[in-house]
Length: 392
Image (cartoon, rainbow, N blue to C red; front, side, top):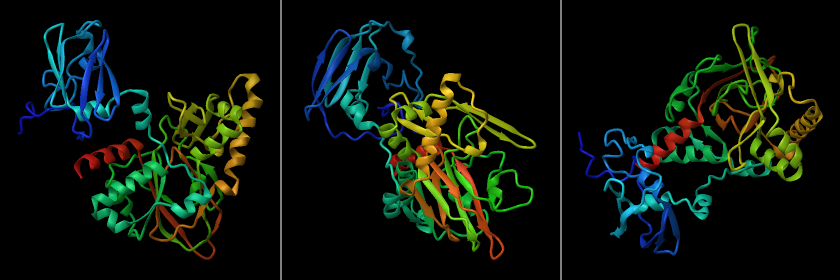
């Protein structure tokens, strides 16, 4: 086994290219300021620096997990000495003489100035009908399965656009498991690991009929909705059954701009979602539009046919229904809808916590329609991207 103790420079496995070097250091009462060779300035608080010391005494060289606890040093901790050496920041601390050494690429990548934090903020590629019809990320199944560079490109497109199409996919039932394994493991639900989307007499969901399905996200009845949804077309010579997809982030963006109170209502007032089956009963309560700490929409939770009775204060009932109707009306507008007929060998993958999907009714009198589907959580997508980025 390789001893990493001498080479551990960061508390992790990622690489941090050195594109800029710090030239000057100024120390203050609570923090120090680095001025870089491109003029950028970074302020690092002493508590933050001590908390992130990557030395083998503070971070396990075996697991790269932090062993040091910030509560073991005083809030007033500060350097006895702070200096730059070959671009590295060296600090000797006043509480116990501990020495920390910080890699310049790591420091620059973790600068928390407003400018740096804004530059790191992920921005999705929001789309509507006009943009996605000309720029749908499309990949070849065999190439993606054999080439990790193509795999990484495919996964990045899935992350950013929330949708992609694999073509020429092997139509052998179960092939979907091999595709999902290129990312990680499949998330199992009460519908199974792989689920067959076809009409059957004992259906426990409208998806297993030939009925029209309105726009929705899958399993809003769960605390954590599935992330990626895979729909693999094995056979489709029935009349009808076209898939319709809408970017929920685009609808939310439009509502924020044009219907601000409706946007606020859907992002703050809770809805109840029920999935009542013979042998299970899943329920979740939460807003249709989920925001992060910066007010950015990070999730859409929506399925009209799985709603429970509205339970909000009496003076908010009409407000909620108005906002809900606005959302539905917008998703029905052709300018936001992308319609696509799946052909055998097509594998459509989309972010179920962002993209709403629907299906036209279809007629089985003159054909068959058989899709296989599965889910892979969004965490697995992001983890696979990071590992590929540091290994390729």
